[in-house]
Image (cartoon, rainbow, N blue to C red; front, side):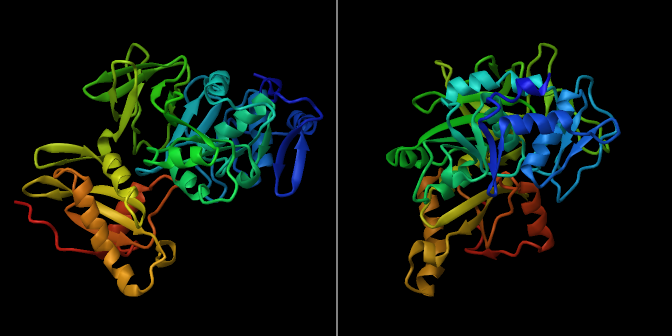
Length: 418
């Protein structure tokens, strides 16, 4: 697959703008065609400069070499072996633990460009901005899609027509004086009210659901309901979501053998990463969260993402994470780890008001959640750890709470478990 099929703009059109520099499509094509790749079976694309990363990546694809894209601040070890047909090696977010190298064909992304364009309405005349670094797969995909379309790829969301982001970043950008005409959002559940707030200011929101291993699984329709992405079949098995499409990865590259990852496959071509979901009679998909991130307590099972979404919507909460803690009677209990808004953000007049905020959050949570969903422990931290894409880093959170590197304040005595 040559670089010509990835670069859709005319030679004189602007392809990339970053940090005051601009590169035309003609200049980008020339750099890709003349780029000299280092020796070795796998090409590394670990550049802080997004243009250099894109040039290396496209040159590798053009020359039929597998390309590993990773964080330049934390270079990834080369895998011992990769599945046959591997052209791209992308690291998972590591939100639940160790990041894994996911192998895929270039076509597994390239073939989804046209349906994504139709689903979102992104135009060739748009300025498109990913909201994070390109070693994060959702941002790299956004960049490659923009170049395939012939749009201008920018790294300044403030001046863009289209911004690809996580719900966390969307919440932050909604306070900006100028909004893009379109947010394309993925990575976690969209907070209640975020879409309406964006629409009230003239910005559309298209949400999609996917995973680094599966690529696109579902995309929101005009009413905001998630439905199967074009070319994707969905199935529920015991409440777990499975998908079949031409966009699914080849699997994981061979690493140290310590972690097999979450991807599961069957003989019929369906794959799953273990997300729990509900599928309506009309094809509406509701993703409940990762099955291995659920909490089984007092004979019931709740997903962390459902509780986190409710807590995130409470006044005074900047972000919340829910983790499970073993319990001798209940099996597990729900533990809420909360990052509060600052006094300035809340426009509180004094420290006494700020001190009352944790109690207020707990009281509002009790009213909003069912008994089985209510946290039995409340931990408050200065800042929750996140991945480069903005997702909650649950693995780092659990480790930090355990070893003391993430200090916390506990409010309220643990609830009676009986």
